[in-house]
Each structure stands twice: as structure tokens, then as C-alpha cells.
Length: 227
Length: 159
Image 1 (cartoon, each protein chain N blue to C red):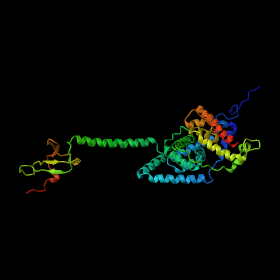
Image 2: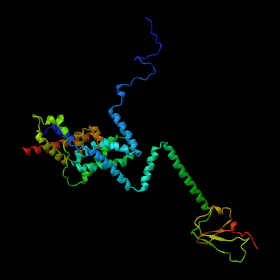
Image 3: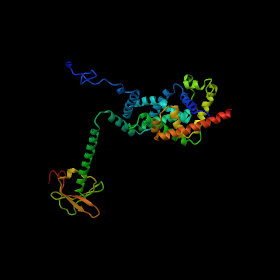
Image 4: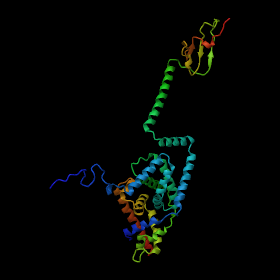
């Protein structure tokens, strides 16, 4: 059998030698990578004094930070004031942000720390000022499951149970409330929470375990009283 | 007791506790207003300094250029200061700002003779460099004594 002589050198993949290989699926930036890149660009612009860039960061992160602060304070007015302070502090401290962590982690750290300090300074518990439940809850799968005929909660009781849950949350310590808010309500992974709070993942897990037990006990007292 | 899974479902439903729809737009406006108010409270020099820093950050010159410029300014200032101090060291220190002149005790005509001037002055002028200087020590403080009249003091004509 005669050897096949090629005029042009091809590699085994059928590409001309010297050509770049086609991008593999794993090389394409993920949505998370793109989000991080966008944040880095906005932060860099904001650090040079570009106020519009910082405004974009405010627009992007205010809903999440609102949720964090609100669920720790259970008070809409306090949340609004605190959130203003959080972003003001972030703006003043922005030049010191070196990019060693994600901006997301950094600003959440500021939010959590300022909220915890605020709650510790406030000696007596303030009345709750709760936001209304968004109508979209009706379409939530877990809501439907919970309030189905075979579920543990009747829909009529759900509002009251939510109220009791909020009261129970306020009975937790600030540190335990923070981990419950970030993990259970906002869906953050343990690793991210540990970076924000600057504690180990083990500490995050143990705080969560303890907080869940406390909440179950508080709600159980409510259910016993109701019966 | 409420199962942990049911507890976690209840907790997740708290995500639906939301502020009114326009809240976050108003929030940004309130934040911008607050930033403007804080800026107005700052002293003018601080605002100018921050704006200078922002301008410098926008101009894409290499950092080393700014460091070099700062070093050059510091070096120049240091050299000038050193030269002033050095020229001060060759001349005795003087105090006060008034200039006194005292005529010689004898009645020797001024022309052709050195007149002594006692200067009490804080700053020395470089214009006196060519003059002959003599230090008169008065004990408590040194004086700067001029041997010769400056040319401008000599009368243009004599009788």
C-alpha cells in the first residue's frame, strides 16, 4: 500500500497545522464569569470617580442587599436607612477595594456587618414593619405544595405562620439570623456565607443547625398554643 | 414539630416579601441626593483634591511619570532650601526687620571712607554679594557690618 502524501500538513483533527484549535465548550465564559467581569469594569470606573458606574452597581445590588437587611431587621424603614448607609460606606471605601474578593462578597460583608452593629446598638426591639407578600407567591411551587390539601399548612394559616416565623427570626441572635437569611432565604452557598462573615464553613453549618432548631421550637410553641 | 424541610420552605417564601414596585428607583434617587448633600458639606479643598485625583486617574499616563514628577519637585525644593541655608551659614544670623544706620563717631567725611552699617534684618539680599563684609560682634547678637558704601550711595559729584 502506498503512503498517502499530503500536500498540506493536517493534524489528526483535520485542521491545518498552525491554525488555532476551535474553542472548546469549557473555554467559553460562563454567565458568572461575565457578571464578574462586568462588576470589575464598573468598579474600576467608579474608583476613578465615575458616579454613573457606581449608580449601576447600586441598581444591580440594591434588591439583594435589601432582602438581606430586611430579613435581619424585619423593618422596612430601618432597612431603607441602613441600605443608604451601606452604599454610602461602600462608595467612600471603594478606593480601598483591591479586588482580592468579588465585589458581591465585599458589599455583602459591609451590609451584614453594618446591620449586625445596628441591631446590637438598638437595645430594645423595635416593632416589625413588614413588606407585603408579592402576588407571585401564588405561583411558587413550594407555596402550592405547602398549602395543598395534604400539606402541613392551610393557606388561611400561612399568613399567620409567616408572621410567627418573622417573630421567631427576631428571637434569634444577630449572627444566627444572618446565616438563616443568607442560606435559607437568599439561597447562598455555605462557602459564600463563610467568606462574607469571615468565618469557617463549619461555623456557618453549626450556626444554621442551631438556628433551625430554635425556629422549630419557637414555631412549635405557637402551634401548641393555637391548638 | 415542623419538619426541617417544611421550615426551610417557609423561610424561602420570605423572598416574596418585597417593597413596593417603584421602591428601588426612588432608592437610587434618594442615594444620589444624599451623595450631593454630602459633597456640599465637604470643604472646597477636599472636593478639589478628589476631583484632581479623579482627573489624574482618567489621564492614562504611567504611574511612574507622577512619581518622577513628585520626586523632581521634592528634590528641587530641597536643593533650593539647602542653598538658602548654606548662604545663611556664611553670614551671621540677624534678627528684626528694621534697618538702622549709625554714623561714625568721628567727623571724617563719608566719601572715601567705609561707613559702618548695622543691619538688623531677617533676610539677606543676594545683591550684596560683591561687598566686603565684616562681622561686628556686639556680644548678645552678631551684626552684619558693611565696609563699603554701595555704589548707588556715592554722590554723583563732589564739590
